[in-house]
Length: 507
Image (cartoon, rainbow, N blue to C red; front, side, top):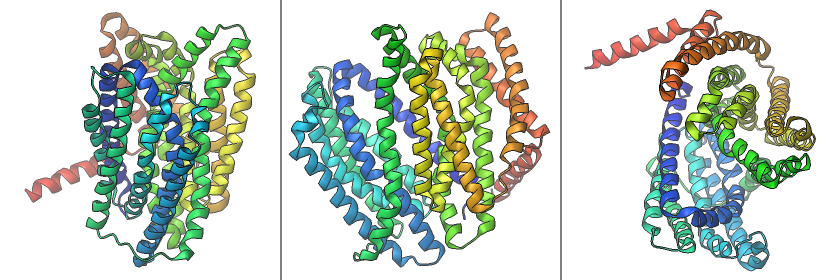
């Protein structure tokens, strides 16, 4: 099994590139397309992405898990049967969804305040079919631990979307023409991405064999809970967008004030809160085939080791960002958005990072072990408690109720997932011990960072102050973690020196 450190590094690097290119594309769109054109496109894609979630959420994960098991047991021929069955299933499902939209487009038009969005949605439909093929081959590459091909295909798709998007839009076109151009660029980009990942699959020795019915049942049974969880998750944000403003208005805020507060919390604060999950998500991606192989080989020792180390990794990465958000939240809000409220909310939400990281990684571990149904139940329980909190808490906390609602959800879900992992695997998780040590590290690191930042803020520009504060926070966090034996800096330095010496000897 490949080194998780190397795998996580590869995935994180390509994820960073993909997100940067996507960010640049959004800047281009905002300048050329304009607010109205982007609004039309975003409204149409909000419905389209729900359909895409049905196609491309649970299927790739389960294919990767099953394929990893085949490879571990040296049953490589079964990959071809699995891919064939998955292709038939996803193609049938995507065609069915397309027909539903086409036949009942009048009903779908009721979802939009702007009727022109229906035309955009219809142009996007071919993307469903192309993505259904794309997701199957990506899942197969994922199961083979071929993360380079997996990441390259994602980056390729993003780059193609940008190039075609620029070609299909223009400042002289109307808002609807630009929105339609973006829809066409999306469909064509999905087609080209499908061809690219298909070529990668066969280049790396992939096969397609005849369809065998016995593969249908496990594929559908195992992928359905994950798909339901992702689809349900796609509906959560719209529901929150209705609940929070309405509850704020019920306690005296105007409609404009309520929407403004919601926009700051969701559009400015939450994206920063999810930064650590980029790294944790890379580990989650790497864990699926790794643990699936161990399950196929009944390697309980490896499973136990991966679970405990993965949970600690998620806690450590999440905790590393807590002092930064606590000490520099307000300044970050001012620097990024010129909005102090976003920074204040970031400070008050820093505690969420730990349960958020644990929820993400524990869900991935449960899916890797084949407990996706139980993971879905835990997700539903957490979501129900969150919505109850979001309904009750605004009268006491105002917009901070959104933060606490998310925090309660993640905390409850993380606890349920960890209890389930402990019960099913008997792994030595050491959650409480590591949690106490990390809190001991977080408190002085936050105090030191806050002190240094307050001094720098008087004499240095805001950007330099944030850089200095970030460096102080990270260095002190790692040094204190080393003192408490949470990390071994010496062993890491020895490994780096050995690697450099090896490279020099090769030269």
